[in-house]
Length: 450
Image (cartoon, rainbow, N blue to C red; front, side, top):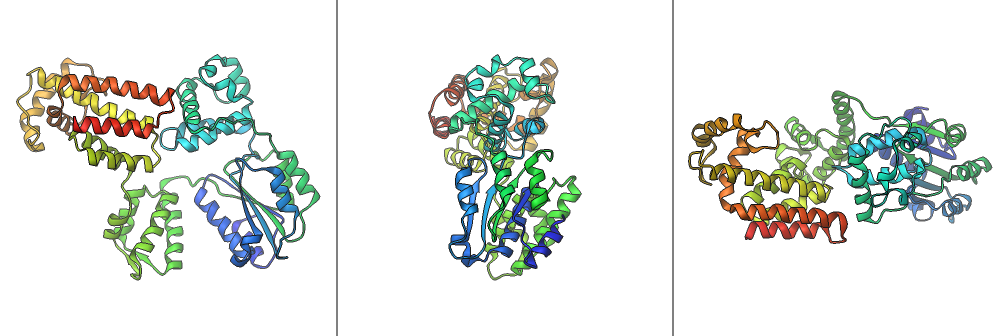
């Protein structure tokens, strides 16, 4: 059934006993969920008639009690189970692994949840994985569990996922699959007026439970929007709906500025648009300046702010940039990697200066003077060294410029010691219970004030 047809039926009072909303397009899925709830259960009845359960940790007995008991007020009763994994099977394992790879750097918590689902479905127990246990899994055992994934790169993401889950205390991957219980519950039928709504990211349509819900209720799919043009068009449509509902409009320049900040991604863009609507208050037009004032910096902005503050020994700015990155969900190990990269660049810059192969450079030298007087000498050194990308001389001229003018703030022995400090921090983050944020803050304060 199409979404439009389902909404029309709901407005006519035809409410199915169960609904399944699934797909990768999270924003549209949840917007539809709230649209359905607005139609079938009035706000005044929600204290006693609307219940939300987390699909990752849903207690089936509690769910059953909610669904089989009539509403205390005699009206409609709705139970929503969000982000359930009961529709996934071994056929989804390769997709889960790809999602782990895609999210491990930028969204580690999301990757960890995918990983726990992977454990539950694959049959690997947490005990099989923790510590160095994952190394004992043979290629043959891996292929038997995940037929469509070679596992060639599992040494890159498996230990990191174990470390992330352990640091968060998320170590349970052996939850009993309640599919059969759901099937029996729906086969018996729900009391009149009671409704079950399930949301899921992925499903295996061959599972009996999916077929049961498809027959007894309504299934709505929200597939990933493919292509930049289609994404922008969907965003424009959803943004227009939101603006009209709130009596606002967005100037063309503001739209472009918002897109630059959010990458025209659906959920981040609309979340920021809601902030802008609140920010402008009684004004009906949202302008470019409003976007610049309200919408937060991108992750790339915050990384640049952190490394710049470190190089310039600005402790306050460094701590502010660190907080911004953590608030954006960046994993502490990735931040440690960025800091280590900056220290290595400063160390290489210090070596270049000590080689006496370059004209004198000062912290106050402007970029134009650097390009004329210094960079030709750097380019002359470059042919004598490796073309590896992690070497300073092979970086963009602006990166070289910043490293050379800032390295004089640090002595060579101090930079070498910082690399040892960072190695110790890496070990501590992976093997102790010390708060990673505290370790990062201590290092930044030390590096910027010493």
